Amino acid sequence: MISAQWRKSLFSLFPNKTASISILSVSHLSTPLPLNFLFSTDAKPPPYENASDKNCHSIALFLKENGFSDTQLEKVMKVKQRQLSNASLEKSIKPKLDVFRDFGFSNAQIAKIITRDPTILCYSASRRVYPSLRFLWDLFGDINRVAKVVVKTGWFFSTDVKKNLLPNIELLKSHGLSMERILLLLSFFPRTLLTTTERLKRGVDKVEGLGVDASSKMYIYCLWAAVSMSTEVWDSKIQTFMSLGFTKDDILKTFTSIPIVFTVSAAKIKRIVEAILATDRYTISSITTHPSVLCFSLEKRLKPRLRILQILEAEKLIKKWPNLTAVYAYTDHRFHGCFIGPYPKLFSGINPPSSRRKKENSQKNP
Image (spheres, helix red, strand yellow):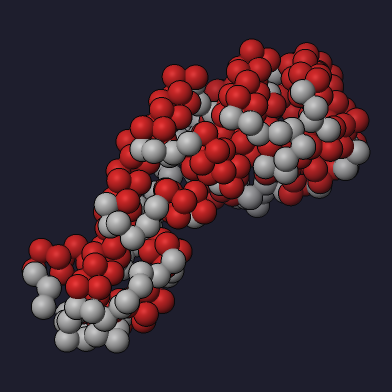
């Protein structure tokens, strides 16, 4: 039988996941207007305290009539109510939406983009919005790809795109990255390409220092990871891997397989690697072959499962430990079915995930 302490630990194999819902409460105007009026063109308007309130409400109605949902409109008003109170609907707001439409954006796309960064409504249509969209259109020639970039990077219009992007594009081209791959980088990780040229250069140096070739399909993902952290943090992770016995080739294999591994803290990497190697059943080669294991929770997933395998081996119920995939990638239900369910006396009290959830729900709702 298993001790109470380990049984408690093993129960964490199947943690309950609950989502928290945040309710937004917003005061839109200097004299708050009823939400049903702000979001409906049919409501009779209350008295306005000043012209700014009336102007802000006119803009809100215009945005709603042009495809903004109540939720999107509420977010825009929460963030930029003060600026919009003094903005001209005819001279400032409408021209910006017209620019987007001229490029072929739908109302739904425009609403999504502006909701992501309501500050767009405060930029100049001719000096900032149009040039930025034109530059992206010239690069991609596809409105959906342009929309994808703009939606992903809400602050896209806050920078001089041409001035900041061109040097970075030239830098990457000089290091052998094709224009096709550069456009993929801009599509998937626009912030990486919109960073300063100095920071991008440091990222390129980190990636190439590990031996990642520009022709590799994983290059842009590796570059994203490298640019996302400081040189000090990057160096600490390299040192952590080396102190654990990884060779440069091991680190390269891990990095190019799953670049996101390098966004895991050095402390967590160290704890997971040490726990896996301590079993004497897995090696560094096992980890480099399955680097995703470094992204999972040590306490809630890996340790309990490793302990289950240790118990099974001690009881001579398994002759050989399974592939490391079983330790981190198997669902709770599959792991239970393979290694816990067949031995009910040994693991008494540990029910299948679905059974336990059903029991807990019945207790909550008698």
